[in-house]
Image 1: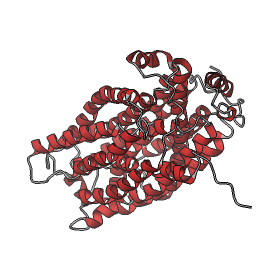
Image 2 (image 1 turned 120 degrees about the horizontal axis):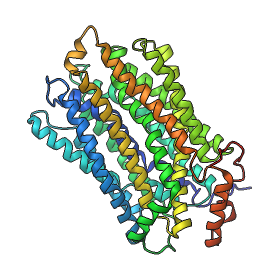
Image 3 (image 1 turned 180 degrees about the horizontal axis):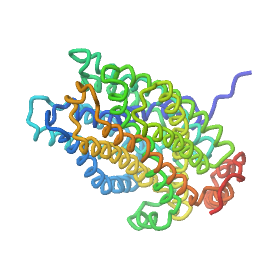
Length: 489
């Protein structure tokens, strides 16, 4: 008997497209969060020999960029929501066009000419970063997936697939510095510009193929045109969105602060000469932990609501970071047998929050339809994107401020026999202590999420179904989810 072919949106073409369409964004985000600060301070040649100056420039650029984000992210999200629905959909054309443009910009950002003045370097870095940051907003992947189905279980499948595939590709990204060093002139100095091209170009093509394969859904085609009144009403009435953005703001620091600080900590705690090998080791451990987290989150979502899953994930990760901070108080952690297992547990806990957070973002879009009759997918997705970019920038900026405070000079530190203890004390704060604190705060804020309990979620989705008779019954509830562990609001 022939096996029954799965129907849209669980068919192979859609699942494959959804799985690969965000790969260019994953790689670009990883490079910006994990390598941009290092590139500017150590390898761009900016203010060479002037202690702390390059770090100050980078930190200020990233902080000012968030002011721009506060303006352009909701504005571009609103523009996407108001745009006419084409034969390809409303959000798909924006994604398809923005992917190659952002790829060109991020490649240029990591290939600043070495023979120009420091002033011109600063201008180029700022212009390219702001341009990339703006175009990056026009990739509302969650908005596209939200249109495919309202079934929470199907959404989880549509999110788990790209999560696993992205992480498999991210394994290659963990070898970015070793590859860049191998491409360099002397086996020590990395050729970051060429490595960025080799990493970005292939995934950009694959992402565009993925977007082309995904047919945008029709769950919002019956909605009226979004107006500025709807935009303002969303901020006034969508309490789940407000709470979820606060959770993302605090919880996201767990990854972004650790991502930026880790390179500097590993570089000097375990020896500059071992940087390539140790970053590869850490990358492999983190990737396999994160892959395991995708399956762990699927298991947890069968029993708990997305909000409870987020609380469990951030709570676990924060406890591990608190332990690492206490260990660092006695001096830099230089034993890999202690360092790597604890970081593996951190990545497992923290990354388990990823898929539940994405589902929560889609719940906020559904809640817009519940209170306004319009989903405002683009605006809702853009707000989550703004928070993600805010974290990435603040994470880099905080590390930059620490480096500036200790008078960080890459050339001096790389050849020094004794690294100042102040560097490890400062890095310990931004690598372990602050992320742990923010994680605990995120857990506390999630207690107030209006759809935390199963009974609350079912009530909202039952009313959505009443207003939208075409929605199948299975799409508005999650009978497997337990209501027992949820905290009262």
